[in-house]
Amino acid sequence: MWTIMQNRIQELIETLGLQPHPEGGYFAETYRAPQWINTENGNRSLATSIFFLLTSENISRFHQIKSDELWFYHEGSPLTVHVLSENGYKKLLVGPASGSGHFPQQMVPSGVIFGSTVDEPDSYSLVSCVVAPGFDFQDFKMFGEAALLELFPEEKAIIARMS
Ligand code: GUN
Image 1: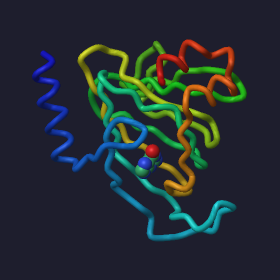
Image 2: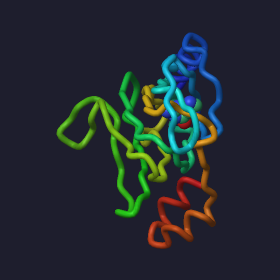
Image 3: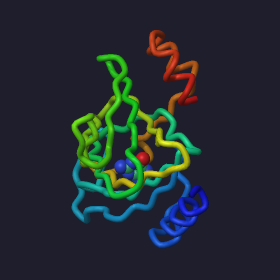
């Protein structure tokens, strides 16, 4: 079963031209709006879109960006997005619509700290992420375990799992 999955993961990496992402997982930018806007962080494209692929063997580590991020489910198992914010810790499930909280579209607000996992064993998840204003690595910040523990001392369990 895992071999079939690995073949599909390899096929997705090749056919979608995915590259390793610094936060973990694989991505490819599919769209960058040709219009530009002036934000408080500098000039940014109006919007960008990526494919993002994560497997159950990997983690997308905690990071932060300066735009709201819309997530869209495509295939595989649900993706769990772990969100740390002033409201504490919560999970968003990006996956086939179900009564148990999975939703094919999720929104992660700008400024929160988030990472993701695929919680079903021997599996993967393919999603898209759209951000407006568009993505710029200048707006991207990764967080180590010590910094996260200082910000969220009550969330030791998830911080340890994701580090
Ligand atoms: N482009 C490159 N990296 C990213 C990312 O982490 N999120 C989004 N939305 N776009 C990106």
